[in-house]
Image 1 (cartoon, rainbow, N blue to C red):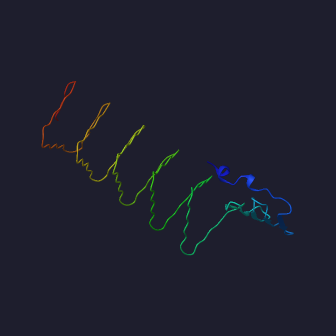
Image 2: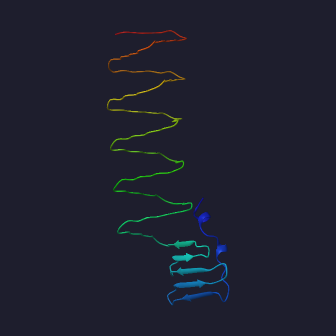
Image 3: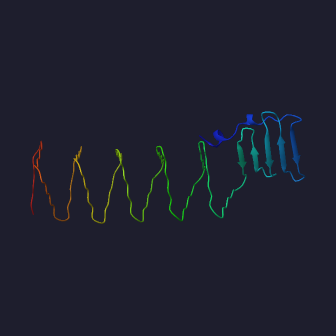
Length: 193
């Protein structure tokens, strides 16, 4: 969708004489009261083009030809009982000095056509109560500068279609409480220095 698809259509405006009353100031400001049956409308327009329009179906359109500012000294609440569309045709910046909470009762979908960068200066916790599927079609790099622990409370299967290389700068220790089985279709090579 785009800004054009969500704005009211021109069919919402059909002024008829003598129902449409227009007042225009010498400076070019316009106030319009349209009582045309089925198309009742109130329209206020500044000479620079900025306007407020209230349509017969209850829709309200606010058009600013310049920048728009909203300052709330205390709490600010927005309730939308229908679909909410936000279109930004340039950059968007959101800054919250306190905590930020996002909750959805349905799915959450994100599409990023460029890079995705996430920086966390504190702890990062992710909990998935269902299925987790991660697919990386390019190169993947994970770097941990502290200790690392992988804990599986059930079975664990690891498949490598190509080669796998493990490089250790220190000792290697393996502990198993059950049977250890190894199978290879090629040779096993071990070297000690």
